[in-house]
Structure formats: structure tokens, C-alpha cells
Length: 116
Length: 114
Image (cartoon, rainbow over all chains, first blue to last red; front, top):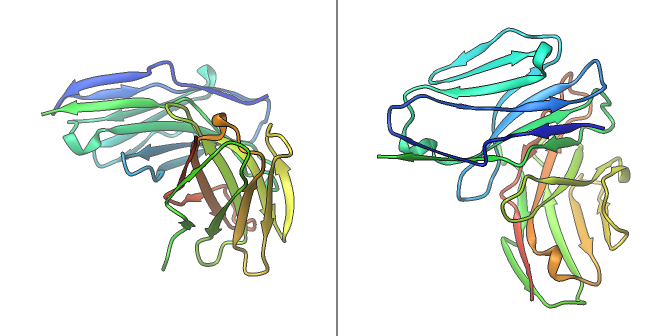
């Protein structure tokens, strides 16, 4: 069975601090995809990044960076110099290799509050 | 290019009633998935439709059913509503032929069951 764990329920930081959101996953698939989504108060899930299981390179996009480590089944997300607009719930998700399925298993989410 | 759209935005029903939610996928997408997101939780996969057939289903009772139309739009039907069905219902679309799995989500329909 596939499972995603986000141990941090809520995090509060002061603006300009760096913050890391943790994600640990479980899967028996050899090919899989990992995602991060942002959910602002409006409710819509906003895609942030996709990473496939064969690509362990870390990625940086502006203030966002992701650290994928297959050895520890983790896919952590760091926001550098956080801003108030980063306040949202962040979800890590896992998708298997079955294209027919394409369904996502989401973690419970981490609520990030960035205080001015 | 319109993204995924859902209607209605909000809905209030009473226990025992039936409800239909609608979703139009992003242009060029042929697959629609439905998720239920209870308050404070992550989305849970309900089912997925492709070529007008249910291809995969999550752990949801038969009270939850769906349909996909030839234009790829989809409906989610819930019968005999329970209080526990109150949630944000998210629709996601994707293209099955894509080399990677990426789903685009709509804004959701917030269902309240009284």
C-alpha cells in the first residue's frame, strides 16, 4: 500500500525565515512520482513540483527547493526567505507507475503560517 | 486556456438527499479524477474516469457514483447523504498519454450536509 506522512501538522515562522516541510512516503512501486501542492485559503490545489523516482537531483526554483532522497524515502520542501503569501496548507502526494490509475495518495498536509 | 472548472461552488443539503457535482476538465485532457477532502485532511481519491468508464476506485461506498460524458466532462453523484459527506470535493484532470503523471485541480465544490 502507498502512504504519505507529513509529520508536521502546523508550522509558524516569521517572515524571511527559512522553513522546511517534511514528507516521508511508502511504496512498493519501483517507478513512482512525487508531488508538492499548495492549497491557499481559496481551496484550489496549486501544483509546485513533480519528481519521478529515477531523478534524485535536488531542484531549486526561486525561493523553493526540494530534496529527494530515495534512501530515506523522503521528499522535503524548503522555502527560503519566507513571505506572508507563502501561508497555506502544503500537501505532499505520491502517484504510482500505473498510468491507468494516476490517482494520488496525499499526505495530511502541513499548515504553514508566515507572520509579518 | 480555461483550467479545470467545477460547479456549483457551494452546496447545502440535508441528510438522505442526493447531490450531483460537475466538472469540466482542462482543454486537451481526457481523464477526470474525483477527490474528497474533509476539513483538516488531505484529499482522498474517490474514483477516476477515462473513456466514459470508471477505471479505478478508492475506498468509497457505492453511494458515490460518477459519469463521464463524450466531451470528457464528468459528474459525481452521492446518494443518501450522511453528515460525514460534508467536505470539499475536488476534481482533477489529466491526459492519459502524458509521459508523466500530472493532475490539474479545480477549485472544488464545498458540500455541507445538515
